[in-house]
Image (cartoon, rainbow, N blue to C red; front, side, top):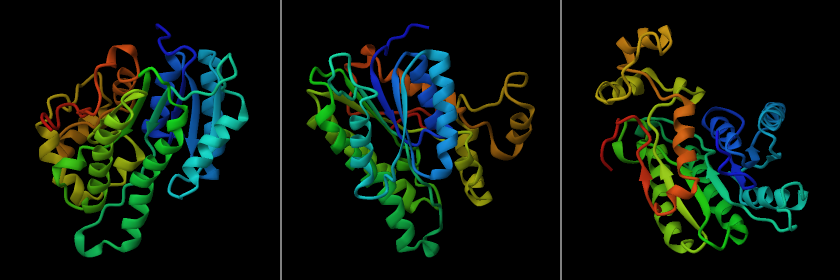
Length: 284
């Protein structure tokens, strides 16, 4: 595989599992050096194992950084930790962030009567304020030749009005709005785009309520690429299609679309929400 990101530095938040881990793995295969962001101390050994594996397989440099992006100081702390470590400086001693993937997020689903201010506060701090403050902290270190890439992980929920997602859908709509603003403000430094996955085979998707899964079944049934493929997809997913309507995306499929947005060929694409959902949403 061509190492098109050789020598570039990519920061991926929420990199200890799921989509974030898959994105980190994909970018590593393209030669990017990586900062693996994570929140909980329990994720430290997981991140260390991921880092060791990626370094061994791809000959890259990695740095795991713990930071709570749902706090005011967390995002700035992440950037300062990376910069002060000196482990990921350019050969000339300068510090540059080439790629930033704002992936970390939380999903708290609830029907309107059951929503609390605490649910709202946590969700907007992690899903909206976190990416905002991290991008703000990263801005001074972005390239100055438009070669930088920022990719925000949104969700199909920003525009579908799914039940139980007053808060989650709202946070992702806010992230998409910021994506368009940053594309203008940072245009001489980087492109800024978002992707909006639908269901993805992760712990987060598995935790959805039966009511929510019934709500989205019709969407899945009509998504062109979400039909299961006997002999290719697991028998478990094939059997579950009768209940769910089809299969969720694999994390690698989402990571591949993120990787597409990091290269030179994506230089004329900015301020967009790319429908990374197998046709579950055919227009936006």
